[in-house]
Image (cartoon, rainbow, N blue to C red; front, side, top):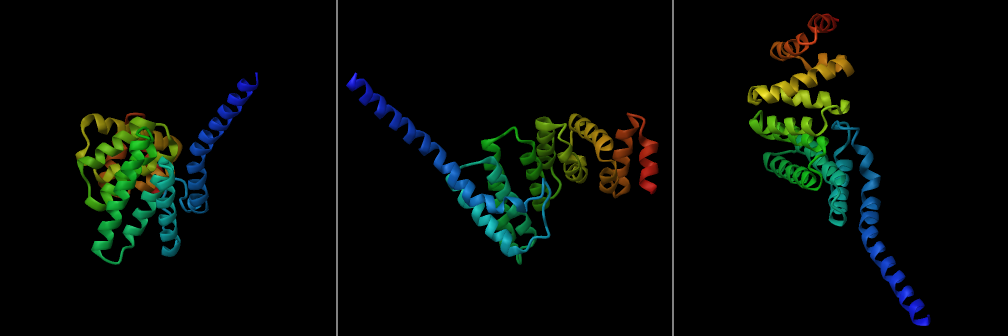
Length: 223
């Protein structure tokens, strides 16, 4: 019995050490990242932040991901770099930050390939840096596949999709049309605001015509 208690104690100690080893990296990463997580407002880019806070956040998220490869921390790292890239003082710095943003987003997708937010942010990064493309269309489509009913992502997806519309396949355009219809049901004013040009309004009107809402959209657009 004494030997049994002895081995039980050692087993309990080993389990405790294992649990601590697993939990410690997450805890350290959280302690590093938590003071900076509030700088990202939902899924939008908080462009009102000063550069010093953004650079501090970039450093914190980079250190946090060194401890624990969380898709959330990696995505936030990419977002901060995306904001900083738009403010870069020269082309070399801008390209470096965009490359870092792409690396962070792709690493986040490796951790969580079914996270629709990350695909949306990657689409925005691709279009901001390289312009409209088939890659943007692919990323938007992936975001829709992974979370088509996420109302917070509908308008951000459409904003980037409208700019790369010519690169969408017929199947992908059908997906986007369904997102337009969902945006009309959940965020009509934001949809009207996103449809700034005649070309985009034509896309929106065609999609809403399928559900008998074209005239309603026209009325709201005139307000």
